[in-house]
Image (tube, rainbow, N blue to C red):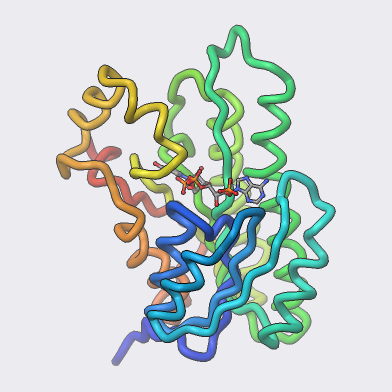
Length: 252
Ligand code: NAP
């Protein structure tokens, strides 16, 4: 028996693909043969260059995911450009840091809107197309260690990522029989804009590094293998998992 990790002929829609983990995932999916639709509010030029170097077709859709306004347009544009969406990676996300005692409603709502609300409604819009043509697909949510742990000074982020783990399981249960695999990846501590504040605080930075068994922070390319696996036919019977890619953090 053989297991295929080949994504040739598939289109992957990746949100927040201009930088960081989203860019790393888009490039890995491109290297595995997928066409890429990169969705976000910033220039996708660097990601386009990297995906084209991997031999992939590339399109971008400009959209701000802080509201639901662009959701239907994103899906319509992606389908017009590529025929169908076979893989959705919900990667776009933000974080706000403040003590829980001082946390504002705006920092709560802004984070929940991008990380959880837009993720749900984009998944719904894409799943409707996957169910309508009866070809199914793969949905991969980018969760966090804060899907398992509490953390400190990031109440809305922890709530959103813990909620995303639950949402991943719910959608897996509702859509598994319709040929859609819904899973999540929980990255550990990676070198991106998201962790800049932690890395520039010498005390927090060395505390974090000190408990990563692998002995280093992750690089965006470290996530690629997990994303390709969950997007591929090799994962056809995997539903509702939250897969840590964390250098061993949760094993500690
Ligand atoms: P990042 O470099 O800050 O990337 C975040 C991405 O989300 C960027 O592409 C950003 O676009 C996009 N985004 C944010 N708000 C958006 C909006 N309103 N509309 C459209 N796009 C928006 O951080 P990252 O680490 O790569 O984060 C990617 C995902 O991984 C996030 O969900 C994050 O929570 C998760 N994660 C990261 C780590 C880590 O250690 N880095 C660990 C666990 C989970 P702009 O560049 O235009 O702002």
